[in-house]
Image (cartoon, rainbow, N blue to C red; front, side, top):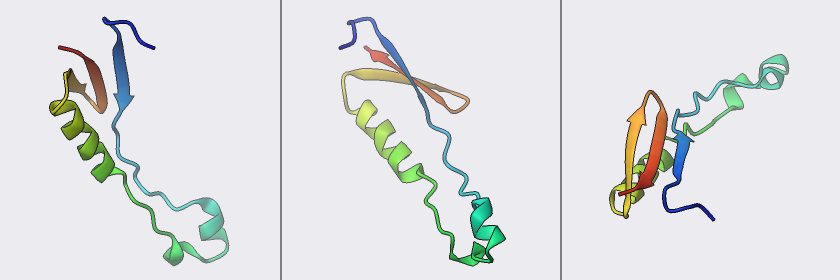
Length: 67
């Protein structure tokens, strides 16, 4: 659904895993666990490297376009 000259920008800043206020409020902060998403970000970079798409990264923003 994109034109041949389209550019797509993806935010690749990993999630920092902050504890939600409700977990702190009710004393359950030690039960909170969250993945940062870094593994998925690395998989996406690898997929773009192996595809027909070219990408550049600028300060947490992945810019993808066709070669």
